Image 1: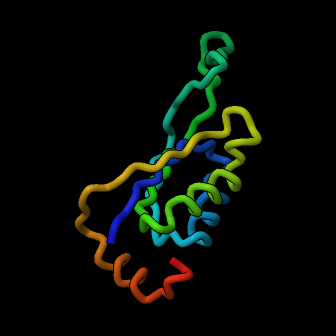
Image 2: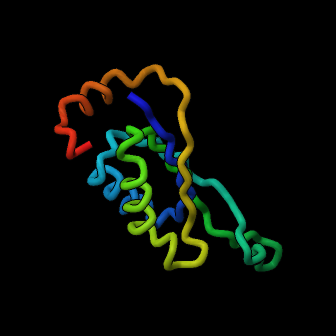
Length: 116
């Protein structure tokens, strides 16, 4: 079974919707790293020297390769990546090898092919 890593940098207010969309599209789990910081096209704003940049969360999803594009599209929609400037980004990377995914592999193997 081949896997992809979907990495999403998302505004905190959209994390729950992103996770729900990922699960509905076939993801079997996730890891969320909170309080990342980033800057896009617009420069960072400050007020009296305090950084007003929105905090981001990093969401990591290891997903079956055949599900990856569908999950990527669904989370982009749920987190408003294409409709709100600065809402976040997501990308997918090929995974060469994994360990520790036996539970997820068993779960994915039980699902009919059209659900994978």
